[in-house]
Image (cartoon, rainbow, N blue to C red; front, side, top):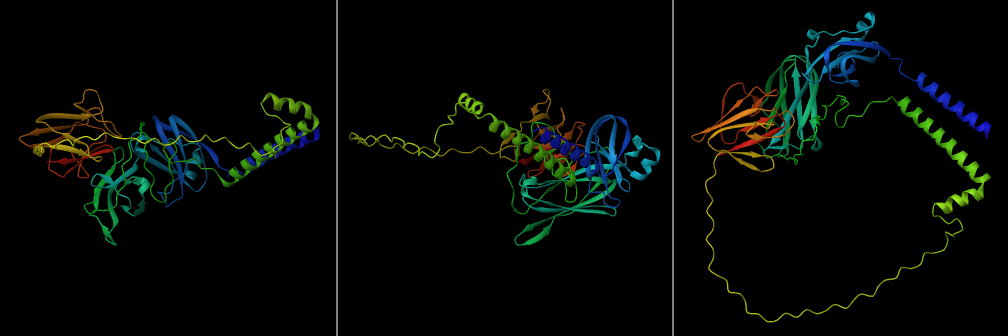
Length: 410
């Protein structure tokens, strides 16, 4: 027994040493960030800015990341949608990286949403072009009509959407957007063709983005659907280590049971198990109660109730101005002002991702509806375009605040 335990300890030590030897040889690099905040680090190959490797979340103003020579190290400020990058070889020469506020000259995320009749589309292809950088992503039913492109250069971007309809592929009119570090980047497409859609999911309780990454990108940890990456060697060695530990425990239990069978029987009896039972005896057949006979129910004759005069059909009142949500719920708009936001001081309290306390104001005067943004963080959008002044809403227009959208009804 002592010899077995000695061999088991030596095997565990050997596995741990092999696990350390199998690491990819990365080096630790200290990073001094310009301020406290929430950050995401990544590595990528040169010339492939969208395929992010080894993502790592961090908070505060200091971090230590594992880097590999020949790659590009990047970091994104998750609170302001800006990012910075540096070649790993250049950072290793100084022994640390101290990105300044001016180094964050890239856009962390661009979100593209494709809907039809206020519902997410089930299938589409999204393409984004920013200078020489060209990326394509496919939307599936599980994506809820939304796709995210990460680590983009600043400048004018062209976003286009292709979708199946009537046995062929159609393309919506491209949308141009100016990508500026520090500003939210979001584009919405409202397809007029009757394409397949999916049922919208309720927004999550926490403000964690559930948006899937675009093709060729790695999910960011801390968000749904983003597992931590592990090397194949690490997974294999971890499995072997667990197998060795389980084998040692099993052998120890077997040796104990074989040496002290009487004590094992006593323990089984204390646990409510009878070791003397013969498992081969068939179980007793269950007793089935005889069902009661069905009693006949006799109804007395009764004269039919006469049908009165038919009621007049109700007359629907003409529909007034309203906002119609994706689930079909309708919010009537009365003349005057209506402030929308997540705060208690808003006239209409709405909850969702990207909603400010006092987000936007609707005004209804003489049947005319206008909307104004109240300095919200993520902006107010009409038909997929961000507004910067009071805008008139027409029946059928799409109003978007953060993750929520409504159709304007007349």
